[in-house]
Image (cartoon, rainbow, N blue to C red; front, side, top):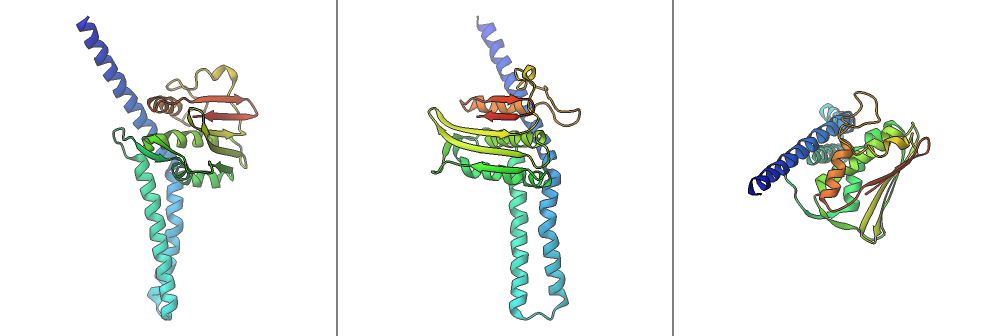
Length: 240
């Protein structure tokens, strides 16, 4: 019995290591999907700052105009700093850190990470938050990985100009967050497998097949549930 118990403990530790490796792989894949958007977001303020610096180098401005240019450069630097910090915070690998998470702020930062993809596809995204600030106990970085994955999946599913909705509301057992889209939907025969590792309804090279599996594990580790409702040609809704 003692030997069997030891083997079970070692198997559990190995399973935990594999789950962490899957989570890291999926997070790095998400960073790759966000890279072009981050580059675009950084290039915009950089172009504005270059214009201001070139004008200052030419000289001839009155003090008020020079101060205005410097203020614009400062705004651009702040914008770049915020973008880089958001990406680094998301990409950083760390142990589970449980604390109080401001759900509204976390969802807003998640949308900010995906802003380029949203604008490029001209998707209409609506965020609906409770009237009162909603807080929960959990690891903000891991939970953000869940919601970013759901948002990116929704963006992949909708056509150009499509609709994606994110809503949070108090529930009898805690807080429910729903991510919905009016995209292609998921075939009924695939609904039972979408949380399986490496299962994907996307084309080859368009995903790791780990996103929903990793999200499922993170939600379970937080004592929550994740479920999906979907109809082909109508859209999907994921509820956490």
